Image (cartoon, rainbow over all chains, first blue to last red; front, side):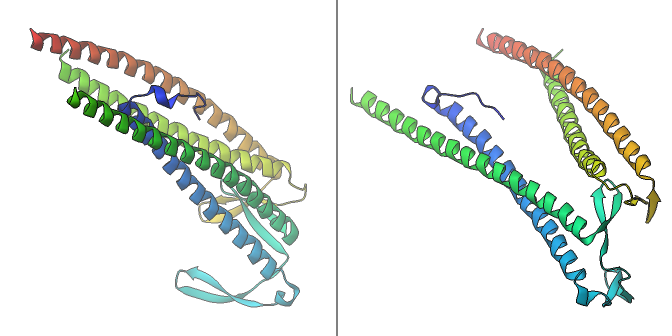
Length: 154
Length: 115
């Protein structure tokens, strides 16, 4: 993102409004991204929990219902509750043991955690900029008001 | 060219530039996804079975084949990104030209009105 520094006191109210609009837009964009990241993260966490549950020894010969459609099921049995097929993206799937599968998802969760923190940092920064500009706008408005009052008096 | 035509051309160019930028973002998403897959493949155990989702079925594929496929796709996407970026640059230049033309016409109009 733009790292150039702008002296807010040098800008007129019109410019300030434009800059504020821009920053607010960016802020919205980042907030949306953060939301999407958190959604993805909770999905991966769910996967980890699912693997842990299914691979438990007392679930080895568990019957389960296999969904054929949204409302149609047949009963089935897990052949091997220690083996999972993981979607690695772009249509590829890989056979993995329970441990490897958990590790795979954990890595993804960790990565998302890191990115989520980064975005939170950016959002904080943008929020501060937005507030600073708002402040500057208020000061400019007061100044204008005073000038107008002074002009009327004289 | 009349001011109206120039304005139309300018908005058209703006729309085209926006389309290109969307395409560029899409390519970036694909690049990132393929990179993740490539990373995953490189840390795969030699005996791990890889499947490819083709239509409605999972077909087992050889690991080296899958790896080669993803590498090729990465190369292709990178070329596409380069192409897209040159397009964006030339479109931005076109837009810049149209913008200055528009400004010139507007100031001419203003002068005429003042006279």
